[in-house]
Image (cartoon, rainbow, N blue to C red; front, top):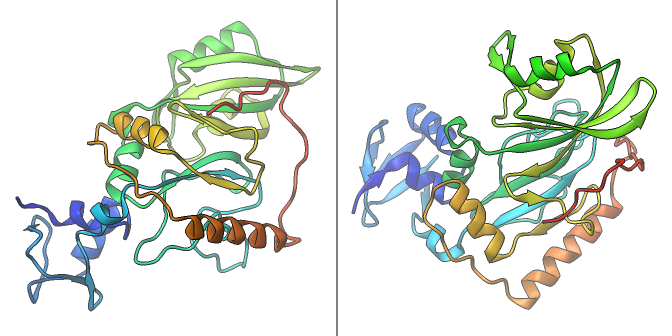
Length: 289
């Protein structure tokens, strides 16, 4: 059975489907000795290479669908590298052989909280696609007076520079004076969308943390700068959200688990002084998985 080339490449964990489409368009992908083009389809019998290196298109079935949950601190960027030398969210993730971690969406430099990473580019692409309408919940502290009319406007929809945006839910999270906390839910991941919505009402966002993606919450044991690998049940739930076929995850061997834990401990000790560590906690704990 043949499949779209970009879909097969994404499944191997080289990158998201959109990224694979760019690679094909740039002439980096060869199929059976010929430069691939968008629209090509391949079977398991075809020979595929990227930048001159053979690609095992069966690696996804061998490795399974792996997902990490990472509790991002403020002061990390979501790119793989930074010309300014700032720390990235990929710095502390466990190393992979023949695959790489693909971020499911991004968080701003000054935003903390839940991030997901997967080895399956098809899954990452599906979870990020606006058509899936997956809820993202944030805990936000705003400076300024918030009244019922303002909340109604934010739920009904506000015209931003890239179109109408809205919260599907706003709940009071406590606080005193002009600094108050709110839990808000959005259904897409546009750039700085939560901040821009509040700013459209003349308010300033002073803290922002993502606390939920779909049905996935940050476990209390996962502190900022730490990650865990999701179990089969959680992987299946996210696969269902993405409307993809469930795939059995490869069980790590004891030595592999030990190596991953050792990497995390080592990387935790080498956190640079450039990272700002915030020890303040939110007024309402929402940390179940």
